[in-house]
Length: 147
Image (cartoon, rainbow, N blue to C red; front, top):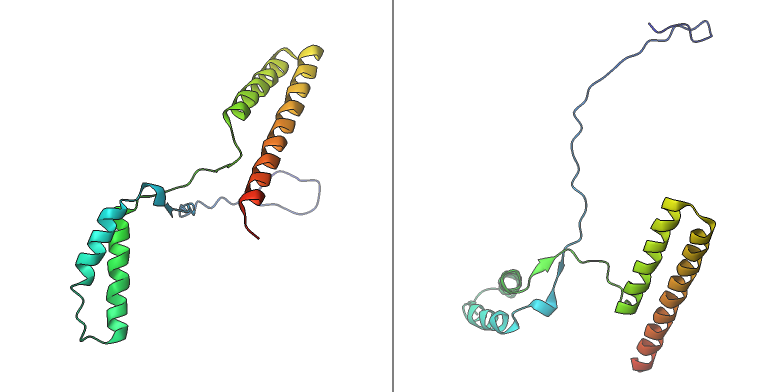
């Protein structure tokens, strides 16, 4: 029993130890088609598809064909977890972000009014530069898209 909690109720504290299962995070794994060995992939498909018996049922032949494609893909197309890709990101944005982060660290460490103002200016400059490059990239994509 616990001490008086200020009411006429008597509270009891119970501790239950449970072993909770650990959950694996849902990590999206994708094919990296740029690094694929397309020549070997094509050769394997041609070699393995020639082994399909044409006297089988269409359903069974399709199953075998799909399995051949999957096996060849697993062997010749690497897989991995994609990074957050930003198509507009440039070296200039990288440099500006470094400058902003350094200004922030200095402002948080020293807490001087001048440093906080510099950090604010660098933050605005980074955001403006970021938006400019996003806009340029969007314009480029729109120009390249045939409607």
